[in-house]
Amino acid sequence: MLEIKNLYGGYGDTDILKDINISIKKGSFCGLIGRNGAGKSALLKTICSLLKPSKGEIFIDGQNTAALSKIDLAKKIAFMPQTLEPSFDFTVKEFLTFARFPYMGIFKIPSKKDDEAIDKILDFMDLKNFAQKSINELSGGERQKVSIAQIIAQDADILIFDEPTAHLDIGAQYAILQILKDLNENLCKTIIASLHDLNSAGEFCKELILLDDGQIKKHGSAEEVLNYQDIEEAYQTRVIVKTNPISNKPYVIPVIIP
Amino acid sequence: MKSKILFIYICLPLSLAVVFVFSLISGSSDISFIEVFKSLFSDGISDNALIIKSIRLPRIIMAMTVGAGLAVSGCIFQAVLKNPLAEPFTLGISGGASFGAAIAFVFGLASNLFVLPLFAFSGSLLAVFIVYILSMKKRFDSNSMLLSGVIISYVFSSAVMLLFAISDASRMQAAFMWMIGNFSSFDERLLPMVALINISGVIILCLIANIINVISMGSDKSKSLGLNVNAAIKIVFIIASFIAAASASACGVIGFVGLMSPHIMRRFVGANHIYLIPSSALFGAIFLPFCDTISRIIAAPVILPVGVITNMAGGVFFITLLLKGRNNA
Image 1 (cartoon, each protein chain N blue to C red):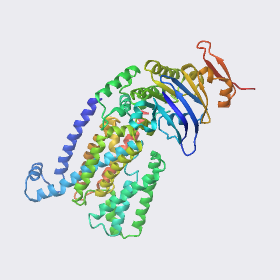
Image 2: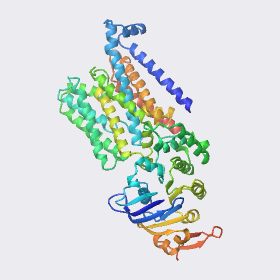
Image 3: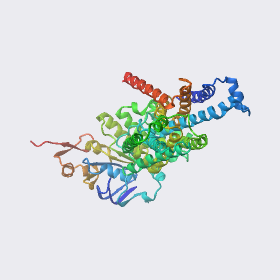
Image 4: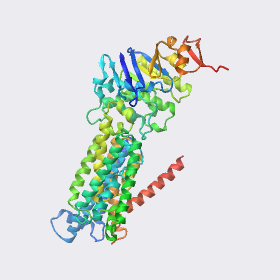
């Protein structure tokens, strides 16, 4: 259970986020949507304590995150940044091993247990053949998959993804979202992901949060959030909302009024 | 993959031993291999024993510790700044050492072989301090650190030019020789101090290699893995700076070792700092005494500054790297 109370915050001295109050149940798959600059990344980073809130509190299972040590927090909540920063030629396996950092001893030497955990994840993510490949040789989709594998290796209950499907083709997008769905349904992880594609957000997420100008405009099921009034206001674009005949979920198409 | 790393780790210590012996027996006075070992383990005070024990041996050990230190500090700066061009030189540390040394030379304090390193050491720490202050506001963002390092280098090098312009030529010559970097004139009392700083620094950095791995992934990622990034960067940066400053204070500005060693080793053992840091240290400890010995014998009896040799080797190395990279593309 993740609870955010009266949260204000942002990157510098000015608050982007204003009076955020959310509670997300354990085992939810929550999609965060909103315009560029609405504060999606800022909110996700504040939840992970990468940004310090100027006011307000965040609770995980009733514990205030500000009172947790960095290591303890890293065992509860994992964060996947929007892009993998360009880095040295680590192999995929080495890269995944870094996620075991919170569990390593004082000299941070990976143990046999860490090694086994990584092998399991390589299996689960179907990445066995990539284990000794350099992370810089991978395609965009493969990179994202490795990034997700790293998040799994951190073994936290709450997984936070900042635009996991950015810059991917629709096939790769759906593959990534399917993995998130598997993590949610089979490994019982709580997932919070910011997404730009409203339609896949509606298809995959159990609940959606629409962020507008640093405030929560709407929080609820896809049917509740994806209505044309709120979407038009939040994105300042004319849209029509229809129902997908197969899944019965809403989908959104922008329209040009001649 | 693993066997390749093992192979490298067998080759490096062997090469280190070979270079050690090679450096001991080479030189302008002709001493045979057997005599070298005789004099090394005897208490005699023959001429040969004197040359071996009090001239060649300290020089080789100094070159080894400085080589290892420079290689590791370059490796650390590249990891922390996430930039393959980072090294003591690009961070202004070498510039600071030159500036400190130039002051000592110009004001005639350099004749005391203990004052000169002190000035050079303070100069490098001053440079580190300024870079630190300048990039503190930007939260140690790697670009701003590198940029402030380059700026500091320029400022210090023009200050050095200014000092040269107003001083007389004889002092300039000595200062210039120092700045190219050489092992011909260090005070023997410096050796234990430099060795202590460099060896203990290198050992600490080898032990925390996995922390350095995590730092190199960028601050968002390393923070979310529970690392106190700012504190870790500060500590690692300070250790690497001390190593670089101690090295520069003993033997001047020796280029390319810090930049090149990690690059070469990355090709053999990969990017994982658990393997990279110790192997870079060994590479530096092999490469620098080797270059130093070459500098002693190539134009004997004239001893060239070792910096000339390392810079030439480095230049050739980077041109090859560039051409090879183009072929791959």
